[in-house]
Image 1 (spheres, one colour):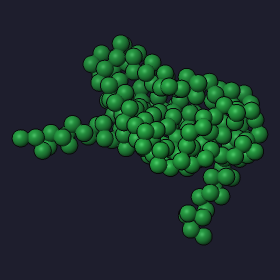
Image 2 (cartoon, one colour):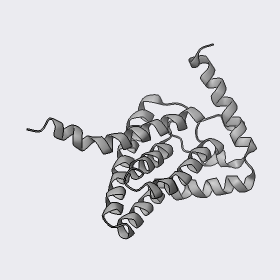
Image 3 (tube, rainbow, N blue to C red):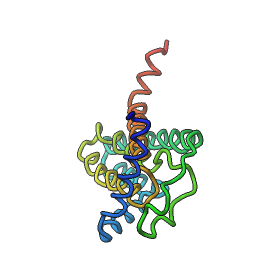
Length: 182
């Protein structure tokens, strides 16, 4: 078998297992993290606190995180979702009612994950301790996107890759642009 034929089977199995094996209390906590991250509220709040309380390093980390998040959201939601048009996991795979709350947009890639990973990966080099703190809700959010039936694991993995690319581009763009400057 090839990766192209195995991936749908792996996606299906992991989606069904994640949706059915996470205890209800944990699922509620995951939903609370997702709700706080909706419309990037969590990351904007984190950036505001970093800028307010973190001095020069906090402002720099917050700015990097916000720019990386915007780059990742543009790539994932503005470009990739428009090109992929992948349906969400079938509702019958998800044994709970969270499946009713998912969006109608393309499943591929996970924009929530792209934004969270971008923010976290851009903050971490400037302020490692805060980056480590941000990694906790980022990981929980990634699990929630599969557990709720909003995404396949491959959607989340692609969102994470887009987020990492957005953080990399944000950190490297000034040097890339200035390299060719007269």
